[in-house]
Image 1 (cartoon, rainbow, N blue to C red):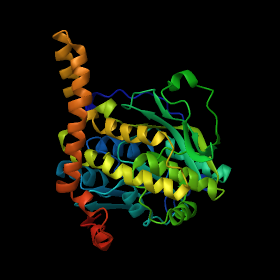
Image 2 (cartoon, helix red, strand yellow):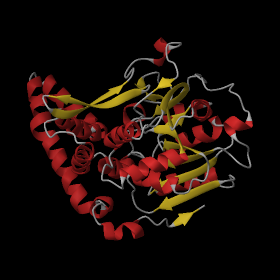
Image 3 (cartoon, one colour):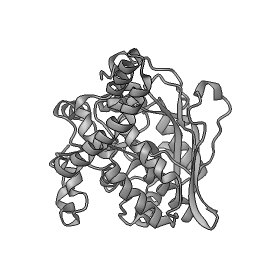
Length: 384
């Protein structure tokens, strides 16, 4: 499960370069318009590469709040070394895991600039990406801006999301939800010149930029809900913006990469946190909370698929084991036995293991519903 990050070839999109550096669009070194909040998403092994892309490819002035939720010691030390001596920088280290939305909220509490960019710790930023989003927000008076999000290693051209929408609609008297990530799985190179700045109703929460006051309004609307998993929080975010009449825009000249397990693999030390954030145990409760909050009917058929997808994503690091098993049975001339083993043995066993892991081993899972411990739970042990 080697990430291969030492041999990554970076494509020169550089779409956000050459933008206007006037103070009204970027602020000044003494008074930046922007704070960047970095928060954990699903693993830690690519965090140093992601941080390098932020530091090297963002030339406008910005404050930085880095929220580190129990990364391994060697990753922790790399992050601290990279940030040491950087002005207007806050590093918050926690000796326990944080859910992504918790970490984001911790970071946002430290923001005192008009705009904030929220960037997951596994997102690679192409040159000028944050500047392009900031310019879009200022020019369009937008409450939120979403970039092009690619998926894979930093040299990928595969689109994960390029704007999109999330809507509620009626079917046979029932309220269902529809999600559309525009241009998903298409190649960015085939769309050059076609993408344009336009209103959006969905932001992939790997990376986005928001007006700070507007973001805090959406947080108040959220009401500290239990919609804490990745997919559901982005739907919640989009629906809240629509209900509050906020302006969201897609900015095509801002290119980012979600460095997914597909692209760069997963290290053994990533697995405890990865297994936590992609647990059906948490996803089921979050899905119920989303439905309750927005009036989505229990008959919505997509919910079963979503929970299946959560489990499938969690099993990505283990797929080589199952692939080897299927190859073994195929070599014996009984390929259907491999498929049966996957459906009847491997997947149910892995789900059982994850549920036991969440219930007995994982401190985040044990603390998740204990509100009386939450204040103590969210105190950093060190800061920079």
